[in-house]
Structure formats: structure tokens, C-alpha cells
Amino acid sequence: MFRGITRHKNFLLNRRFVHHLLKDDPIKHGITSEEMDTLEKYANLRKSVNNIQEIRNLLEKLQFTKSKELSDQLQKELRRLPNKTHPSVMHLQEPKVIETFNKFPEFSSNPEDFDEIAKKLNLIRTNHLGNFCGHKSYYFLGALAQLEHGLIRYALDIIRPKGFKLVTVPDILPPEVIQGCGMQTDGERNQVYKLENGLCLSGTSEMALAGFFKDKILEEEELPIKLTATSRCFRAETSGTHDEKGIYRVHQFTKVEMFSICSENQSDELLEEFKNTEIELFKNIGIHFKLLDMPPNELGAPAYRKYDIESWMPGRNFWGEISSCSNCTDYQAQRLNIKYRTKSGEVKYVHSVNGTACAVPRLLISILETFQKAKGSVEIPEVLRKYMRGQEKIKRQKQLPELKLVKNIHSDLK
Image (cartoon, rainbow, N blue to C red; front, side, top):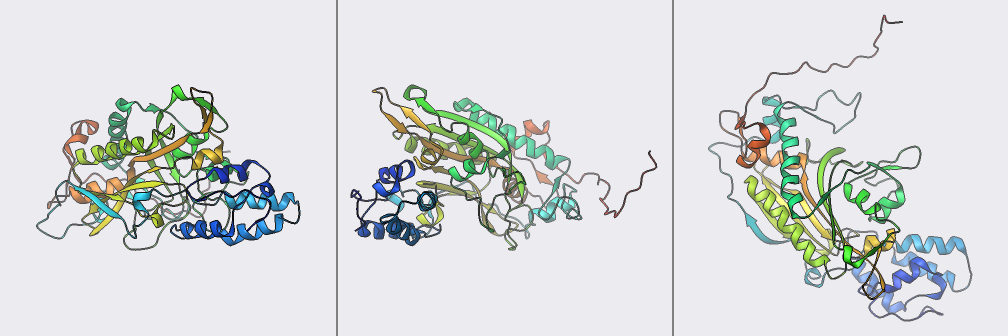
């Protein structure tokens, strides 16, 4: 047993111990060796780094010496611990299919994939871009660019009447905000782009929306606060697998996000609301998709419970994730110091819930592959036509001039 510390039962499910360690002297708080074993058991359910042994070692060292360096290192390791897990998914080894929506698309011949369709119709350019904007970049052209903006407007038209306030967010954030949301910014292999000045490019507007409330104490009467934002999302890592080729996994893309700050009594209900909103969005479009309850090893670090939505992409013969929503309970609030004051005057950590309403590239893949026609056109889903000036089909459009690589450009202007 670690000495000089108070025993806290069920460490993973009772995170008050972590609260103490994050804000107080780590030497004054701790757990038994048995409880560390329990914590390690739960941590192993996640795909996060198992740093329990490092925490054990630091706690042992702090029994015999007061060191700010060791204390800071311990707090850093504690912040990497995953959230607790919803009891109903603890036993899951793989995603559980809850329900499937809309009919399975059928074709008289083998369906083409997004890349083939988009290139034949002159809707996209991905070639010869490495010289100036890097690998996994793209240009949406003409009707495909219109459809991108149409999807954004459609998503916001569904979301905003449900009480979500529209916010424009910054794309450049300090690393502590990104880390506070559960994404690591250190190490060689991570998803975060770092700038020379130490700031980072945001991976999702969820980060900026959470950061907006950093170090704030809200009143219980204000909760829940529901926000939505459209932003560019930046991800440093991509994939080279065949299933994830093209624009399926790229370095930057546009996304409409839902986010809420709420009390601990509201987060479960809000997660269901976010889930139902996403189902409404995709059901109206007409794509074939399924709702999944995700197992612990697919929750990442922040999520307590997470639903994924996967759409059937017939050209790829593949189920691809197009959306998710998560209840992060007080995980992000602890790290960003976001609290609320109850009517009785007690100060507590808030809960946070997030969900993807529209991740543009993958939704475009699903739409073009699902609604492709034998003669080479793509039928625009009826619910999106008003955002396309009443256009019913996307046909081959005039090709824009090809981009050419030029080593040196000389100008006669002086």
C-alpha cells in the first residue's frame, strides 16, 4: 500500500481522487496497490497508452522525496488516464449494432467508387498537388463544391432549431486546450499539427468550443448550453490502406460539430439527443447506415460512452464511419477547469457532450456512391436540392485547366 494517503474505493469509477491529484500536492493523496491493479485492468480495455506502471513508480518516489519535477511528471501522467466507462458497454469486445436505417442500395452493374465518379464528372482534383499543398489534399470543383456548402447549410438548418447557438471558432489553439480535450500534442506520432510558435491547428471545433469555457464557473440555471460550429479540421496522420484511399482520410476537411456543456444529470439525455439528431440528418438524405454502440477499446481517452454511425459505401464495398457522438462526462472539464455552481451553492465540474453533424468528405463519398446512375450522372438527394438551386442531377461538367508544376516563375514586372 502507498503510504501517507487516503484509500478511495473503486478508483476508476470514482474520479474524485484524480481531482485531488490534479489540483493538490500528490504526496497527500493516493490509492492502494490493489486499486492500482483495478485501474490498470480498466485502462487495458482502452486503446490508450497504459501508463499505470509509470504512475506507480512516481507515487513510490514521492513517498521519500518532495520534488516539483516528479510532482509535475505525475500530474502529466494522470492527465493521460482514460475516462471511466459506461457499465452497459464494459463487456463489449466489438461494436454493437443497435439499428440499421434506409434500404440497401442495389445496382444493375458493379458500382464505381467516389474517385472514379468524381474524376469522370470533373468534380475533383487530387493530382499534381504535392508540390504546393502536400499529400492527401484536394480541390472540390463546381457541383461538388456546391454540394459541400449545401450539406453544411442543411445540417445547420436541422440543428439550430433544436436550441443550438451558432459560433465561429478559431482554428489555431494552445496545446493545453487540445490536451485538455483528450488529444495528445507531444511525441512523434500524433494527429496534431504544431506551429513554430508552439500553437497547434485544431482537429475539430469541439476543442475551441470547450476552450471557450476554460477556467469558468457557470450557474446551474444556464445549463445545458448547446453550441454548433462549422470549421476546418486538421489531422496530421493519414492512412494508406485501400479502403481509406482518396478523400476518406485527409489532412484537412470541413465539419459541422455539435457541442454541449451541461450538468452531470443532463449528459446522458443529451447524448441521446445528439444521436437522434445525427440519425435524422442521415435518414433524410437516404443513405444506408447503421448505428453502433462502441466498446471500451474504441472510446479513446475522453469518452464515457460513444455512438458511431457507419454508412455503406457501395463503390468501396465498405462500411465507413461518417459520424459519432460522445459523452465525455467531466473528463474535459477537469483538465480545462470548467465548473458550475448549483442552486445550493456547491461548485461542481460540468459534463461535456460532442457530436459530428456533418463531416463533409465522407458524407460526399457516401452520397455519390449511393446515388450514382448507370449513365454516369449522380442523383442529388431530394432534401439537398433546395441548396443546389433545384438541381436534380450532377452531370459531367466542363473541365478546368490542368494544374502544371513549374520550377521557376519569372516576371517582367519591376
